Length: 175
Image (tube, rainbow, N blue to C red; front, side, top):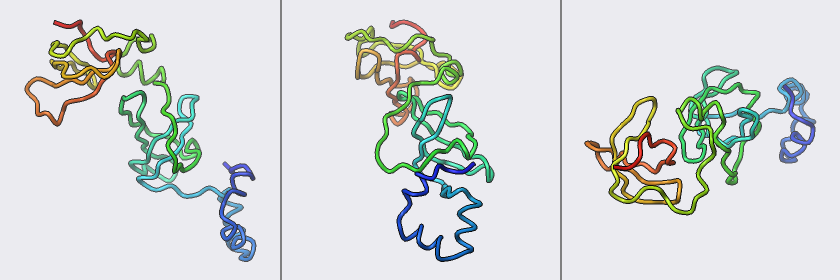
């Protein structure tokens, strides 16, 4: 899949000039469609479930697939993505994407958007049960970040496992 001419034109002038001067480089650029090679650790913009989402490459699965790490509304998510869905390398911060419905369903979250209420239904010290990767763990609320976001400490685990979560992941009400 070739990049649009405008994307190729954004390349530095010295790269374009080298491609014009050298027949081999010009042929290579034409065959590759001017697409830059992506590397592990590159921050990229990815077409994912109909959205343009920021992420970074954590693994090259093959010449046509990458494993991408996304951060959707505070939820870490990794998925394999076709190389042609990696739109471009990014340097500046890009706003995060909304949690895609497929990811929301996989995480077992309610279909409704996050609560817009100004006050949290939880208080510091509340004991809750939190969903994490298909399992449920007992935890306690250690801080209120926003109406729909709290910090939890998982009972029996080190403080290193404390996590800021959306209240969608809390399975039961407070106790």
